[in-house]
Amino acid sequence: MPIPYNRCKDVTVLSLTPHGPEGRENGLWLLELENPGLAKARPGQFAMLRPASWGFDPLWARPLSICRALPDRLVFNFLVAGRGTSALTRLTPGDKVTLWGPLGHGFAVEPGVRTLMLAGGIGIAPFVEYAAVHPTPGQLSLLFGHRPPLSCYPYEDLAQTVGAESFQDRSAEDIPRFVELLEKRMAEHAGALALACGPTPFLRSVKAAAEKYGVRCQISLENRMACGVGACLGCVAETPDGERVQTCTRGPVFWSNEITL
Ligand SMILES: Cc1cc2nc3c(=O)[nH]c(=O)nc-3n(C[C@H](O)[C@H](O)[C@H](O)COP(=O)(O)OP(=O)(O)OC[C@H]3O[C@@H](n4cnc5c(N)ncnc54)[C@H](O)[C@@H]3O)c2cc1C
Ligand code: FES
Image (tube, rainbow, N blue to C red; front, side):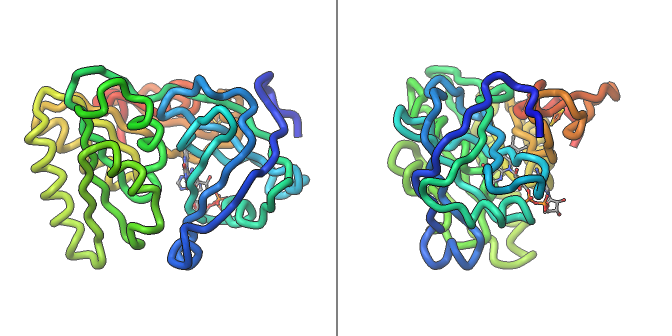
């Protein structure tokens, strides 16, 4: 498959581990790849990954947020959602993965500005890098909503750097309670900055709360992608004016008032 991108590299798998027994049960994995020179990736950017062993099936690469860009390795956290991510769990150290990135626009970094990070499930991944490289991490706080246990996520890494709180929803009745908490935290951040990544219903609640409480807010969309570089139109989202925009090149991070959910 030709990949229309000159930053495409074949990198080696360093490790692949589930987040403990509960991570294995819930399909939450930690993947480390050799870093082909992505140390300058901005938090919120992503990479397209396609193991060499895939041949023609699955055909398309899968996008994953860069969770850490360290000089010697790239760290990804992923949730098994279907065929592609399930196939990723069969990688072993030494396998080759074709990777292209860093792609898209990352989150705004505003030193000295109170910033609320809102993560739903595996949407926590980009915030690990965000907190690690932020020049004034004391201004950051995190609200994390999740269903599988906390041990399935890179939450502890974040909780060591920023004020973090988590909410586990165990039933449908818990969702309104989480939205209530989210609104409370938004109200406390009126005029400040909020950043969100997670499932679409979660992002809808975030967008509504940001408008209600006057919070400048960015959201990261996880639309289905194929090329990651603006060539296939597979990832299109819509602005309030009806303009169709490619999430991979114009996003995945958008100001919440610039996109329809
Ligand atoms: C910029 C970006 C960053 C991402 N970062 C991460 C990350 O760090 N960790 C992570 O676990 N996931 C992340 N995702 C989502 C991940 O790419 C998808 O879960 C994955 O592509 C699904 O592929 P699959 O072959 O496993 O599932 P498929 O077999 O294609 O589909 C399985 C199910 O998931 C749905 N689906 C397919 N693609 C997506 C998608 N992109 N988003 C939501 N639902 C989808 C399908 O409708 C289907 O119901 C990111 C997506 C984007 C666009
Ligand atoms: S993924 Fe191909 S245009 Fe965005």
